[in-house]
Image (cartoon, rainbow, N blue to C red; front, side, top):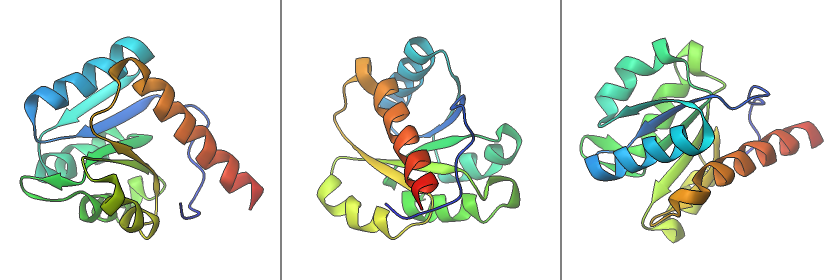
Length: 140
């Protein structure tokens, strides 16, 4: 993806933005239980914009299509907030073929996670994307 500011060394605070309650719960439980991470789950762009500056996530996992907006627009809005300017993002979508090009053009996006995903390997996938983003930044 695009080069951006390096994420912090340790991935510990993850903001999940998904409007489908069951999937939001699955993401939250998978990340928290398997990865022992601090997770804040939001069901809308508005909720994420309100809570993210206080939560200060290292990474945002955001659905591409939300009930009240577009995931890429949300990522840009979050990164426009000074406290979140270096926050990385992973886009969650049922249409990775359509999302990949948009993700590559959006600063801070470190990967695209296709739906459906394997909850048992979710944490490892996020860690790998996080590690690759750090390595890409350190190589450049």
